[in-house]
Image (tube, rainbow, N blue to C red; front, side):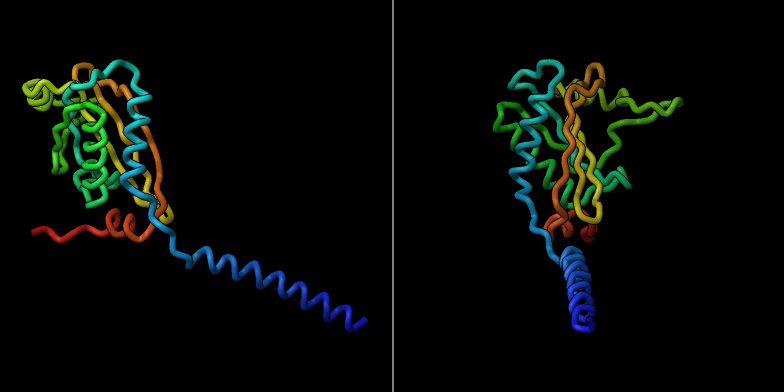
Amino acid sequence: MKTRQMLMSALLGATLLSGCSSLWYYRTATVDDDDLVEVAYEAVDQLLINLKQPLPRGSLLVINSLVNVDDLGQTLPFGRIVSDQVSSALHQRGYRVMGMKLPTEIFAKNDAGILHLPDETKQALNDVHASALVIGTYAAGQHNVYVSLRVVEILTQNVISSVDYSIPMGPDARAMATHPQPKQ
């Protein structure tokens, strides 16, 4: 009887310890980065598939650096590289692109709290004959970076396409999305 109790106790202990070891592994294991270039190109393909109205090839698209959702005035290396990759993918798909490298207040809130393009921004975009604006935000979570991209028609200010995706928080993504770089 004692032998059976000891055997059952040993099996129960081994089972409990194996569960703890897998939890320890999950918390300490490093996650590999996804190929950020591949993910950005796939996101652009989805943006083009999701278009709610035609956006002819050859149209000029203005692309703003992706901003941190917690501070819309801040962009980190992650936001800048993703916007550059989106820009490259759109260019390779036949669009003309113009990038805006610094975080800017593209949209303003009116008295009712509704976002709109200020007249001076609309005029500047119209002066260069831009068809649409590509904007985006990202948020660094504990295990993933979440990205949201939008294509906004300048004339109506309507979102004509959108895509959301996440990438694992590997070492490269973590370094680019969570650590502000020193200003020079």
